[in-house]
Length: 218
Length: 111
Image 1 (tube, rainbow over the protein chains, first blue to last red):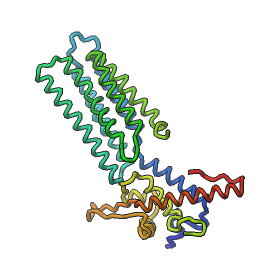
Image 2 (image 1 turned 60 degrees about the vertical axis):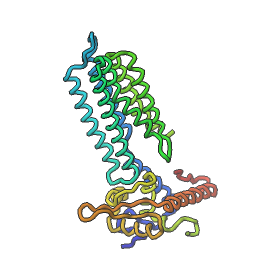
Image 3 (image 1 turned 45 degrees about the vertical axis):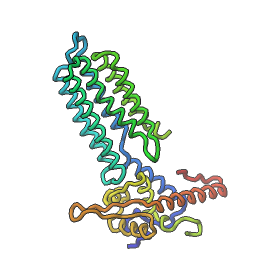
Image 4 (image 1 turned 90 degrees about the horizontal axis):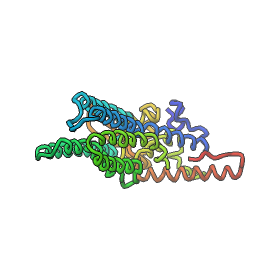
């Protein structure tokens, strides 16, 4: 094997590599690495935007016109839960595709991100049960429960947007938006809040799916 | 260094691709030998040879964890490697810019 020429591979040949050829190699290798090693966040935003839009939207359709409010039908809750499971599975696939074989700090950060989300969901869900146990009315508990996914995701997005290397503007903006939707939607009541979460929450995430690549480049 | 200022350790297509690919990872990340092989499209033997050259220059670090079927060899770009690649691409740009000035018809490929 001639390792300097690399002629046996057909891919490592160096004979006559001038500056232009070297620059082409640099550019191609950069593009390929970015294409294959970067987690496709727009796809993740698309998946979760659709889950929020359809999940909350279905619940809103289920409770529309309820007086007094008594909550979505169990079939709707089951649909939302199945959507969540499907989205979690699809997200894991998207991340695995890019992160396969990659270890180190990014792997730790991903683990902490998922753990923070799960812990946030669990803690807020337990808090909701405590509210119920303490005698809070169904609409109050419902308002709190509806906000849980957006509050947990928003907080984790905001906190994880800052790293020693850079500030992740798209993630910060989306986190703040989700927190604003969760906080403001509650004022509309337990029925309309579902529509607000579906349209503003899901719509915001879908919008981020569309513009995130441009924001990242900027 | 060569006369043109380009680091001869890096100025080999396969090694240049390895360096650029590793530099695309965030600082502190590593990549498994098999994934790197997929990305660079080299045979295991050639990849090992090129990695050894880069390792001897202090540009990459390889680490083997576990044993048997769970063994994983990871490859990381060192700080020295990142600096060397940055210097290499700077020199490359300067060469192309000066060539473009001498021959105005030639357009340098920008990074």
